[in-house]
Length: 327
Ligand code: FAD
Ligand code: NAI
Image (cartoon, rainbow, N blue to C red; front, top):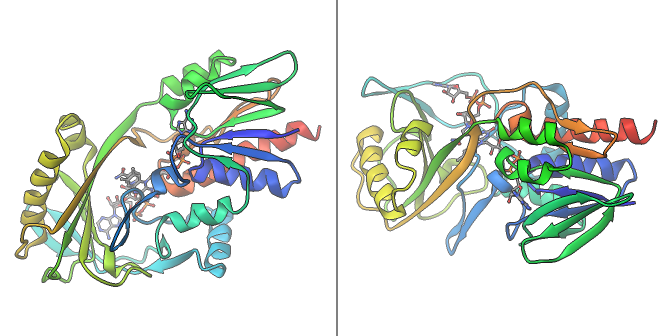
């Protein structure tokens, strides 16, 4: 019998891949028009912009092995930016030995590759997950029903997971108790390249805590000169309901102060508000599960709020399911 997986971010696709590799059938669902979740890109005439995750690191051996495999498939490449740090109003070079990875030619290449030919329904927001006499069934916001399924894996941010976990109140209350921080992400494009050696910059105690030059990332050469900015969670929370134009204007001004070179008005600008960008704290759950019911929950918030944490959480959900299934 088929396993339903709700969410096609890296966690859901990690679980789907492991279950499929074990010979089980999966059916994926996502409310968005494509896969990737917070690793998604926004597509423009001049190319795709990484408006979510900017890069990732691998510290766990299992994830490192997966990244090497993705590299052999051409989905990822190492990114070696000229890094800076902005603190106390000063911009300083800040190189380090950390290996950083990036999807090529865009971040979403990884999730697209992982999805492959697996069956998926996009633009399908699941609103209810319920257990009938023997099996699971799903209901969508559009009024469609899906099922029967032997198991369900919920791979969404916690506040979107909680209402889907009504059959397992303990799991639902754990998910509901997780605090996620928002992030405003902005992309600015300039016809003339900015005159700066900065390719990536961390900042501390600043409204913009990360900025990066898109065209210096592997596979993204070309015009215009696009920069991605991530506002800090603090600034994002304080400006949660600001309209997009005002967010762009304010972050453009702060960017000009931070980058240390002349910054003209952008020829193109895009803002995206991530309401559930990152968990306020890390957890060590791996994945949540009610094995007797056949209900599993994964996502970055079950470990660390990073791409690696999300992938590992998906693996853990699959491992728990397979362990119980083959008992
Ligand atoms: P998600 O990617 O959020 O996937 C969940 C999926 O579930 C989504 O596709 C969503 O559409 C779907 N969904 C939700 N509810 C429903 C529903 N009811 N029905 C159907 N589908 C549903 N991490 C790093 O390691 N490095 C970085 O540099 C980095 N930068 C970041 C920058 C930003 C701006 C943001 C927002 C995140 C960043 N992260 C970074 C974090 C990283 O992107 C996440 O940890 C990771 O992508 C989370 O994956 P996930 O699968 O757990 O969740
Ligand atoms: P990492 O090891 O590159 O960075 C971790 C943190 O260490 C950075 O955020 C920065 O504060 C600091 N740091 C690292 N190298 C530095 C340097 N050379 N100079 C100055 N400071 C440096 O990557 P890791 O641990 O994989 O974290 C992933 C990244 O994803 C982090 O930057 C994190 O903030 C970011 N992230 C962003 C989210 C968002 O919504 N904006 C959500 C989740 C993660």
